[in-house]
Image (cartoon, rainbow, N blue to C red):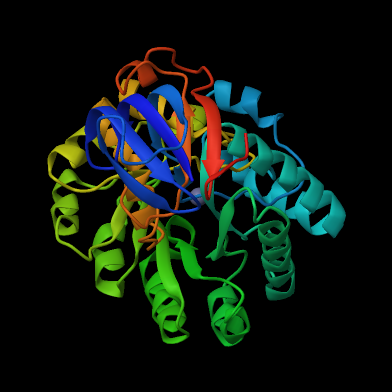
Length: 378
Ligand SMILES: [Zn+2]
C-alpha cells in the first residue's frame, strides 16, 4: 500500500486541496487531509492527477514525413499533398515495405516516450496497410506491442478504414470484415475519405460484428459526422474541426458519442482548431488526444493540453477532464481516468504547483513521475 499527500488532487471531476490518496494497484481511498487512518509513509507532492488516456492515435507505422513540412509552409493543404504522392500514401508505402521488427522498434520508441509524458492508456489504430492482409498484420503488431508493454501502459486496438484507394474498395472491405473479429476492440472510418453512404454501411456492418465504433469526421468539411455517429451508436466522434456548433447539442445526453478533439493536428497542419471552449461550455464532455501519426508527430499529451488551453481557449479544468476521464469515456473504459475507490491506480505526480500552474510552463515536460497500476513506470 502506498500513500501520497498533496497540495492539490484532480479527481477527474474536481480539484481537492490538501488531499491524500492511498492505493495498491487500485485506489483504496482518497480525500481531504493526510489520511491518518492509513499508517504507511507518505510521498509528499504538489499536484497529482490520473494518468493520461490518449484515446486517438495512429502510433503504429514506419518511416517519417518531415519533407512535407516545407510544402505545408508554402500553404499546400492535406489533400493537395496527398495528390502529389506524399501524405498517407507515403506512409502506406513505408509501412507495407517495412518488416515487422522495424515497425515494432519504431512504435515501441514512440509509445515509451508517450509513457514518459504521462500516458497510461493509449488507443492505437491500424490503417496504413490498406489491404486486409496488411491491416491484419498491423493489428497483430499492435497486439504484440500490447503484450510487450503491458506492465507500463494499456493499449486499445482499433481497425481503421483509412483511405479509399479506388471505387469498389468499400465493397471489398465489407466482404472481408469478418476477419477483424477478435483482433480489434473498435472499428473506425475516416469519413472525409469514404463519404457519408459508405461510412454508414461500414459502421453498420462493424456493429453487427460486435465491434465498438469510432468515427473520424468533419476534418475538412462538415460531412454530417456527428449525426451519423450518434445514429450509428459510436462511442466517440473525432476531429470535428468543421462541424457546426449546433450539431454538438446532440452530444449532451448520456450515452451519446464523446467528441474527441485533436488540437495537435490543427497545429501541425496549419488548420483551424475545433471550437473546444464553446463545445465544453455547452455541457458536452470533450476528450482530447494526440492523433500521433507521421503528419502530427505528437507523443506528448501535456502539449495537447497546452494547445487546448491556449489555442482552443478551453478552461484548465475542462482540459484536465479531456486528457483523463473523458479520454476514458471515448474508449468506453469505466475503470480509469478518475480517482475513485476501486479505480485502477494510474497516477501522475506533475511538475506543477497546482492545476492552473500545470499550464504555466507550456511545451515543457509536465510529469515528475508516472504510476501504472500502483507501480512507478517513469
Ligand atoms: Zn486520426
